[in-house]
Length: 80
Image (cartoon, rainbow, N blue to C red):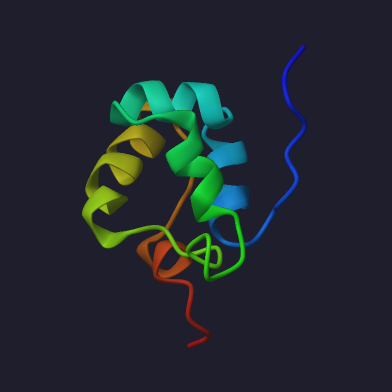
């Protein structure tokens, strides 16, 4: 039985869900699922919902492959 997701901070949680969930995204990025969990956790233990910039190109590539619309603006997570 999978462990339920406790933290769902945006934009990380939404991006991960739209790309197929933690397991699928972690496998595609060659990361541990706990890394993705930290993206969804509040600071100081997590990133506060922010996705580290070094992963943006691979996430955008994965989105294109899956035909999922994810913009750079969503990854940056700023109000413009």
